[in-house]
Length: 305
Image 1: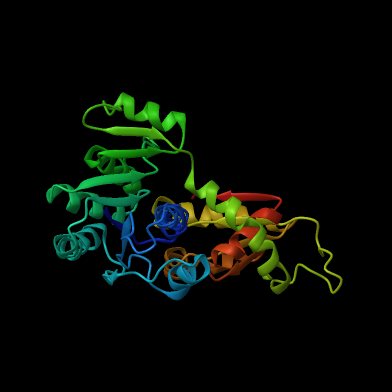
Image 2: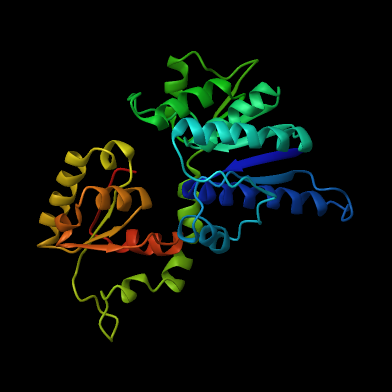
């Protein structure tokens, strides 16, 4: 069986790593039944759209999570939703025509998700969606449009929660003859369990940021970890200024660490908002292990993710 996995953004790399480990475990089990030279039971082809493309948003995750090097890197990069989605459709199609997979596997709710699902559906290839059924019920969010369309295009819908299954039922998507809908749990939680101890051992992010003394005791008992990248927040200067001001107010009492997403940084620069961050510790995007370490030790996490 051949699967084409389509990813393009950091959260998808993390989710794909968990599923790929399971695929590899199945293949090892398949070879152990007296057939060491038989073909793999599942062949996974990795396609990276290039939606996230600089090292801190992309390659470091492949290196750290031990993901296989992408078989195809489409190099789409940034752009408007229409341009990005259109380029992905154009570049994914010849890959699927060449590889002829039985299933295309997509994750989450990005433009890469929708583009992979739409291309596969038009080529009459089954679509499998990990994190199916999640809803914000806010269709001003591009991610909500991507979720809705991908779920209705998919044949195999893998839901993280009971509520996600119920959300699909409300839209007429149910487990039956034409759809496979299963509650399978959250692959992000699987990743946390798998990488948490490794993060504690390998990540020095808190010490590097100056939160440890020489004897490894925390200088301060707590810090807040914040993330800020949703277009609804970053592309609205008034809202962005308000959020940064609130985080800065919090930071007067307890340090606030904010890894700065490229979109957020761009919009802050365009609107001259760095003056609003006096009490916020701004840092570059961090690797997955570093983020786990920061999350695990934070007093609270303040996020629009």
